[in-house]
Each structure stands twice: as C-alpha cells, then as structure tokens.
Amino acid sequence: MKLVSVIVPAYNCILSIERCINSLLAQTYENIEIIIVDDESTDGTGDKCFALAKKDSRIKFHSVKHCGVSKVRNEGLTYASGDYIMFADADDYVKDSFVMQMVSAIETAPDCDMAVCSYERVVYGGLYPIRSLTGAGIITKEEYLINTLKDPGHHYFGVLWNKIFKRDIICDLGLSFKKDITLGEDFVFSLNYLEKACKINIIEDRLYFYCYQKNDTLSRIIHKSLQDCECEMNNRDKIFDNYIEAMKKAGLYDRMKKRIYHYWVVFLVRQRYSLRTEYKWSREDKRLWRKEMYRNSNIKTALCIYSRKEVQMEYAVFAGVQAAKNVMKKVIKKIRT
Image (tube, rainbow, N blue to C red; front, side, top):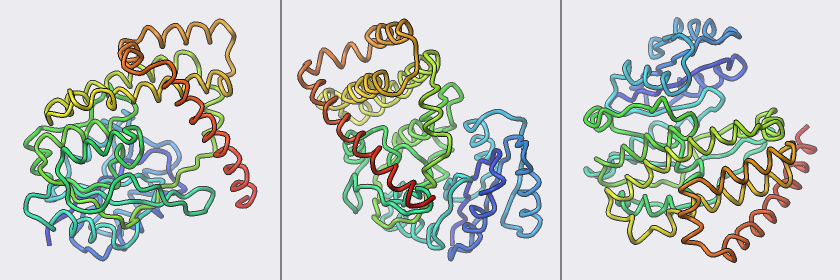
C-alpha cells in the first residue's frame, strides 16, 4: 500500500479539530500520515493537536508563526513524504473509506493522475448532497477543464479536499500555493497541477462532509466594505489569469472564450444583486463600486462578448434562485435550531 499524506491546516478550530482527525484515524486504508500544521492558534487548538499526535504515531504535528492558509499548506507539503497527497479542512470530517476509495480511483488506470469524489454539505446538522456537475468515469484533463466551465467558482472544482494528487507531479512542477491569492488558491493549485496530468477519474461516492454553514456568514456579507469588494475583484483577476493560462495550454481558449468569460458575467450579476439587497453602504460607495467594476478589463471583455439582454436574463435567474434559497435557509435553520 502506497503512503498517503493528508495535510490538515489548523487555525482556531478547537471545537472541530478532534472530530476531523478522528475521522482520518478511522480510515480503512492504514498506510497514512496525517500532517497537522497549526497557524499559531489562540484558542488551544495547538495544544489539542499536540496531545492527539502523542497518542498516534501517524499524526505529525507542526506549528508555524501566523501566516495564512497558503503558507500553512506549503509548510505541510514540505513535511509530506507520501506517494499521494490529500487535504482536509479542520472544520470537516470524512467517511472511513475516504482514503481507500480515492487511492483505488487514482490507481484504476496507469495514466490517471488525479481523482475527484463528491461530498455532502452539512448545514445546521442536516446533510445536503451537491448537484452533479460532471459524469462519473475516467476523462482527459481537457474534458475536465471543459466541465469546469459549468461553474468554475463551485466548490466541487475549486477545493482540494475532494481530490487526490500524485506527489511526484507536485514536485516535478514545483507546485506551491500562491501567497498573493487570498481566496481561490485551491483552484489555482489544481489548475496548475493539470499541466502534467493526463487523465482524471471522477467518482460519484460522497466521501467528504463539508460543514458549510458558518454562524457569521450573513454578517460578513452585510458588513462587507467597498475595500473588501475591491480586494476580491483583484483576487479574481489573478485567479482568472491562471484559468486562461490553463485553457490556452490545453488548446481550449479560442473555441471556449465566450464560456470562459461567463465567469465575469456571473461575478457582475452577483455584485449587482448584493448592491440592491445586501450591502449596507452609502449611495456614494455604491456608485464608486459600480464605476470600479465597469472599469475592470475582464468585465469589459465579458460585456463585449455577452449582449445586454443575456446579462439581464442572467440577473433575473440569479435573483430568483437566491430568493428561493433564502426561504429554504430560513426553513432549515428553524427546523434545525
């Protein structure tokens, strides 16, 4: 059995870290090492992880000076010695067959270099599976990239924890997490990994439990500032540069250009919706943000590709979906609390 390294970044997760680690220790695949890297937590998480490591030799515990999740994951990669690399978030937990099934999936064919599983969202204690974004089976990296066009910002494509990687490819490419990208660095990592990947095995099994609902989610949206939005847009520009590069290397950019720039139509629509319904800003800040968005070169390109009618239709659909989601969230929260 090849060694699998599971990297777990930890920061102020005292209430969930033990559940996460225990679910990894319970794996039916025995040849694993669990690499916990604590990002200078202040709530006792580090002490809890140290205690867990003393009880089981499969746990390797390291702590770093507070530096953010990208640097923490890079630190974890330096300690990883497994043939395969996997990731888990400290808030979440996994099925006992998680590692076994992912290893089996990536070893199905000799030219398979990555495997992806489905997952369950845990919302107020209830389980809600994600919608299917791609069919099961072994596909080429080109097919995988085309599938991302359905929703490049979706967790299914963007996160690391539903994927297994080969350490040799990571080392050959010198891959690391980009420190200048503060959100979406997971997606960029997996995009860059595809440069040397041949085939990807998609399995439908829901092996991971993503604890979706955070208590402060609504608060963060309401109190989002103009500067927060500007930083987010700059961050998206950097992610999109990597997305375009991956598409060009795969020979897909020219024929998929309109679908690729749909990413920015979605962003624009969501910001318009938030300006009308969520952001508690002054009229002047709202005016400045609209002006800033329409000056963005990627949004300008998207609006040259998409007609005004197409954008309006996107907005109408999004607003309708959000209204339905908000009703459902209130119902779920009332039932669960």
